[in-house]
View 1 (cartoon, rainbow, N blue to C red):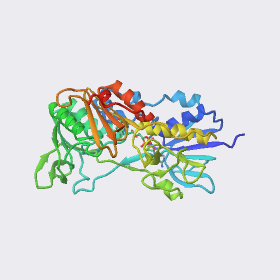
View 2: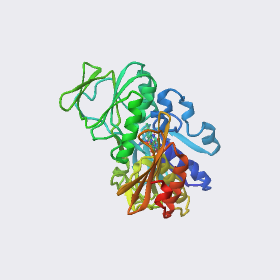
View 3: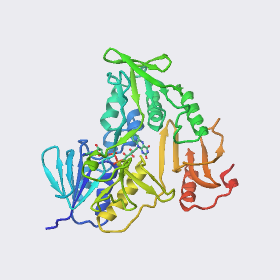
View 4: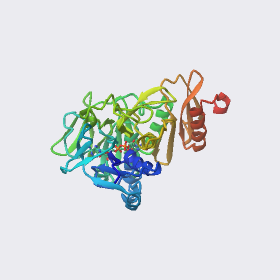
Length: 396
Ligand SMILES: Cc1cc2nc3c(=O)[nH]c(=O)nc-3n(C[C@H](O)[C@H](O)[C@H](O)COP(=O)(O)OP(=O)(O)OC[C@H]3O[C@@H](n4cnc5c(N)ncnc54)[C@H](O)[C@@H]3O)c2cc1C
């Protein structure tokens, strides 16, 4: 009997992809996928988009059907891992059961960052990370209700678009002086502000939430300076915190995420990590980061499966991301950190499609493409290959 036993903690994008890739890598030992969400692994991006807007059902979110795991002999375990003992090579579940492993993966992802603002524990304040979160927000999202969305990042803006489509009166409150401030150029922020305003969403920037007021249910949001915004419900989208405590307690190195190398290995070669919980050095940018996107989770999972199965694959893919709001598909190739110039192709002040190219020392490093799938494909390739691009080709 084989003693090879791959145990994966966390059954979402990274964990599910890792289990599937292990079988593709001809791993013949056991594959045990442990998740605490009591559902088949499902896609998270629709939780602020189609699922929240009511155009997609929970079943349609499953990454793969139950038969896939059966056929691939992937054992799904419905439990939370509470401890890892690397000396004994075991994990302990909240059911009291102990599982042994020969190789272990942390795919524990992240949780929402919670506000500690006074009144933050009132009823009617929602966060969005799980299918259960999205379902309960959706059931409260009755047309005509007033919702304040705290945070003008992607999750906040996608939520605003979905709730506005459902007929709610939406106000987005952002502390920075523009939405998407951390991640895009001012021109892209201005574009999304216009699009939301045209759909009736109120965007308030430079607005800091100081308090939530209500009896037991939230009734108003108080901004610094004393202004109050009436609210029947509030959705908070102010970032995530990686789930690294379990790894840290087991002696795994953590520094803004579980630190992994270019083969997804932690400081223990028999322990890998993948997805939102892991930080890695991105080859194209020579920077260590923790990315919060499906593409990175899939890339880590593919490399991790190779490592666990004795192969030698390394990280190579360019990071990319997408966001859907209304009829718009934003696709982002690469990372724009450190850009010193932008070139705009199109008219973001009037149209609903354009591309914002980011350059550093005249080299193309990233592109935000709105309803421009061809620009996305060509820039993704050019950025990854570091091909020289002519300004005229970018349309600047
Ligand atoms: C609303 C929303 C919209 C998004 N939209 C996009 C998008 O448009 N594009 C994009 O690229 N990305 C998007 N993302 C981000 C994307 O969903 C994440 O990058 C992705 O889910 C990361 O996958 P993961 O497997 O690393 O972590 P997670 O999805 O966080 O999964 C980790 C899993 O591990 C489980 N777990 C944790 N600890 C334990 C334990 N001790 N025992 C057992 N199980 C445990 C968790 O419950 C969870 O199920 C979105 C995320 C959200 C929330």
